[in-house]
Image 1 (tube, rainbow, N blue to C red):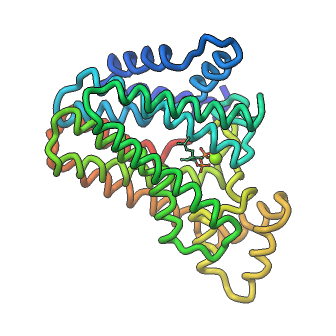
Image 2: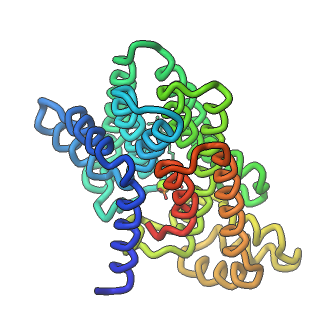
Image 3: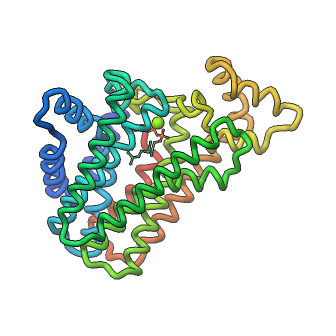
Length: 334
Ligand code: FPP
Ligand code: MG
């Protein structure tokens, strides 16, 4: 077995072990997803089922279920909402692959590359609206409101990112604020919903949401590091798209912060230039300024902050998993 495949299967079995305390409920979420991600129309059915395969780590439903179990008891609302957040996540990635012109995700051709952008946009819209419809089957409007607020922040984050393409003067704070919106928001929302529907107090809900936000931020920084130095065979998705699309992420922002004025122009030209040369020149600067380690340390600091939110919870299996997940998101290769 090649080292890449070995790492990949280690990461997958590590995740499966982590989900042990919620294995039965994750199975129920999968059943709801299968029931939702279908259509009576053959072409739509093929697309939707394909979209379901694109779902990968099931991190958001896992967070929602683990949070519920950590602070109280799970009920049918958790199962429904687990499917809802996963469908929303799938919709966002299908749209994201259009924006990034990505060709591979989860070791499969993206919807935009197997079909086209039109199919991707419509499929994402279909999944998103079906997810909201499913959320509206709950007894009250709370989940729909929280999900509506979070997804609008998420879209705003993506729009802000679009607005900063090619802006290599983007500050670290602005970068962090954008990734908090586009990625951490849905993780925070999943944790908040999990805690709320298990009867948590508002104060506990806020702490759990903060856990999710910090975890999500750590996740995205690690994801942005993988985009620069990861292995496509392990991640199973197109890498290098951030710079192809001129999106400044933390390793590059760090280099640009530290580079000597006399070299800034050479670097800037490389970042804006042709891919092959860019990788070569950027690698030299990343190395010189230890920018990958810097970004990894930042991700680790957010993971620590996530763990701090859990200190008052009983040290049982779901809480232990939430703790271990903070490590998983920053050390994963997938
Ligand atoms: C991944 O970014 C992208 C996101 C976390 C959010 C994408 C959201 C949208 C495109 C808005 C669509 C919204 C709805 C409600 C359908 P990335 O490119 O850094 O991650 P990757 O490496 O996994 O592609
Ligand atoms: Mg992408």
